[in-house]
Image 1 (spheres, rainbow, N blue to C red):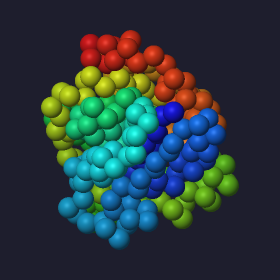
Image 2 (cartoon, rainbow, N blue to C red):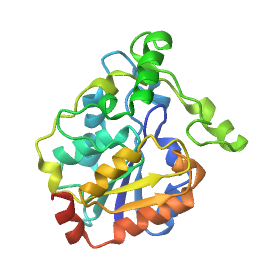
Image 3 (cartoon, helix red, strand yellow):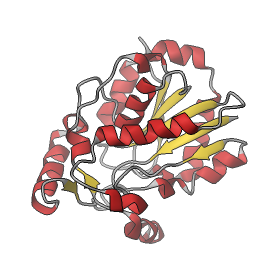
Image 4 (cartoon, rainbow, N blue to C red):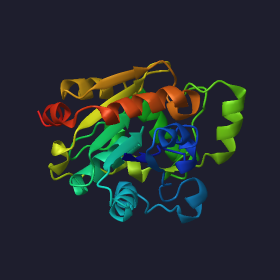
Length: 249
């Protein structure tokens, strides 16, 4: 049995995994899906002080209270922005995390910010949005259609739950010790949208990580939950040794 810790990206909350979690639990695994500080049902905690370190600590605290009495594998999954979060959390707790999976997510290195990893056209849009409509410190919710969500039912489910995201989490740089290099890693690329994270998938390939592709938009946990769950289960079941060596090369 594995424990999947599913970490959402910008604007979302832990609820965004509700369509994926049942498939993982049906396969016999435990699922934890925290909501990061200042987002969704925790929006009352939002302030200009919420940064990347805040969210890393959110996840580290979750890892520290997991019931690991069965010596379960812990599979840490980060979507989009949360690639930064799971990288840092694995760096803090390499003895706890058995595998980290970047779901169409940033693959950052020490000293890099999420803002610096965005394609230039997207980075400009985000910075402009924060400056003009986010009081200088918030990123307003982006169009779901741009993210590849077109089904009216999906749009209706997501829209009222999404909240502005603290821009500081994108401008803060990753602080890593190198400990995460011993943690096996994998990448899942969502191919049916504008491909903001295609460069990050290439980074993963260059590091020798397993890379899987899903023919869906960026919000795979909403638009292709069963297929995503199948990929996560496959990655979790794969032998760790080869992946561990590849991820540290």
